[in-house]
Length: 171
Figure 1 (cartoon, rainbow, N blue to C red):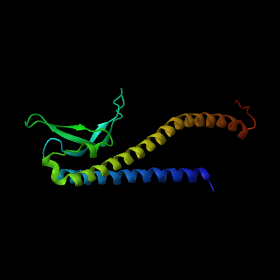
Figure 2 (tube, rainbow, N blue to C red):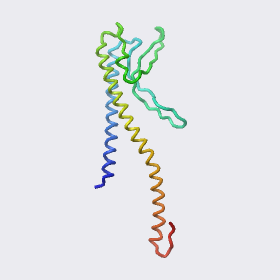
Figure 3 (cartoon, rainbow, N blue to C red):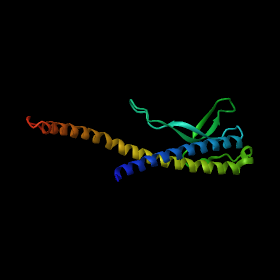
Figure 4 (cartoon, one colour):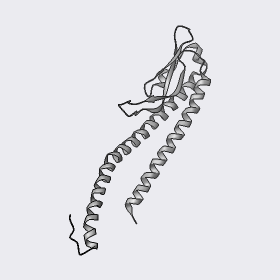
């Protein structure tokens, strides 16, 4: 039994499992966002879940990813200009509006926000695990492949003379 192949198969299965969990979390976040939309009036302070580009935009490579975040909607002086501001992680339930206009469903909004915070935390933790795995493999793999190419080339040079005893081989 090849333990490396078994370990590789197990690792591949775990990565796929984590991907599936992220898909399920994203689906749950979409449903919770719909609830937040239905439970709150269309007024400044309304909380929603949005997918935003987050990360580093470097030279040549864009490392941003679409990431769900809780946002608070704001409006400028009763004008038609609206914008959203991302909230810090884990602050959704504390950031909900408590004014009279939002009072009717305040308890339900609080529960939904707690679940959103939990899901975002779990999603971030899984994402971090996947990034660590990817960067670990990404650092090791190219150097190992280069070394293997050099070693195979050296073996070819040694084997050619061994196959033909008349010629002298170089190492």
